Length: 308
View 1 (cartoon, one colour):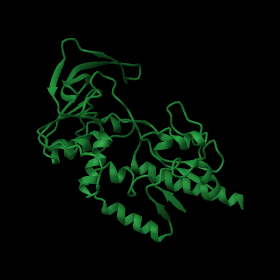
View 2 (cartoon, helix red, strand yellow; view 1 turned 135 degrees about the horizontal axis):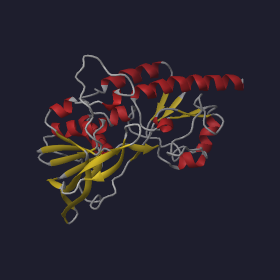
View 3 (cartoon, one colour; view 1 turned 135 degrees about the vertical axis):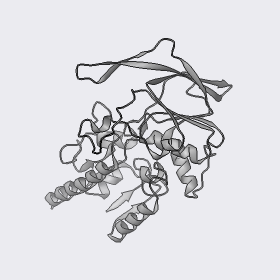
View 4 (tube, helix red, strand yellow; view 1 turned 90 degrees about the vertical axis):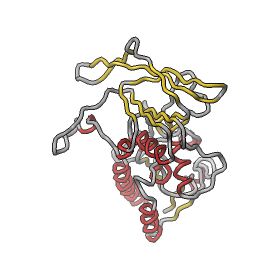
């Protein structure tokens, strides 16, 4: 078995996206050592589809599992989004993780020390940006979420689904000094020349549909406000797998959201090619990706057994 990885080191988002204060990298290295001992071969700095063509893959392997993740981030289409200082969250987190690991980079690191930081997005990625900026010595850190503030949960037990995702969560990063706010939409960014200096925002309301879900956002008149901003990190989630040369050359069928379609046995529309994890489901949980990996491996084993 061979695993191709486009980055310098193995681990994907666990290594490059999640800060060490949440996941120390020796945990990954321990598992990778075990996997190597089991006979798995790893090749890093290989961009499959570019460095290794789809034709080469098909000729060299009986079965292929695609697990590139959901790497296309959601953008923010507002005036000033092109200013220096506005970055996608993963750009910031990747640079920071590499810096902490002592890995060399060609570009200048994004550093929050002494700066006013705005994080747009209230999920785990946004929380990681908050904690990283605070550790770098940010002057002030704001986190804005466009959806309403979730329900506070003060019971001694966890709620059942579907209520579990809808409760308020406070991470250790928030407890370190972040200013959080909900039902806030971004209007524009502005500054001097190409340099970011300010973010303009507005408070919003939400109409409910028949099932009680938030639908049809509207701006609240007179609720506009601004904050000084030297850095803005966009942590609004991920759309789908990157649609690069690999997915094009393999002529994989995608769903309406842009994910690679896999059936109940993780098989794609192309015989012998399987898909697992976020590339199939969209951005999800690490635990779910681990389950997918195991089940996709069983599907590959069954497929190759039929070939013999």
